[in-house]
Length: 101
Image (tube, rainbow, N blue to C red):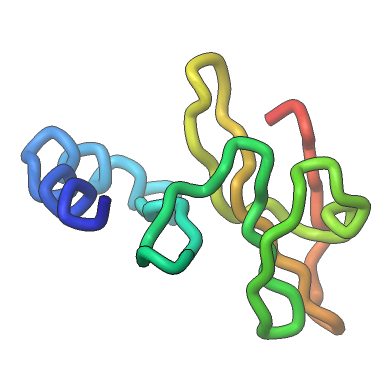
């Protein structure tokens, strides 16, 4: 899984996409979690959540995401889907958790 991602990132077409994304302050990451075998794909119904300097994984409909800012997206064959959220106590931000995006 990781080797395939590294290989893809080194492709000229992907390098060009990363360059284009950087104009918007965006980058590329590999949505994943860890299990007994190592890296595993992030399940479709799961969002990685960083809250108060801790990372956890929650279901897409978890109420705690209401206070999280979306910070990671993937393409799900029809639209951009949030796969990473961030919620930090005391942070000066206005999260806009748009479940349609």
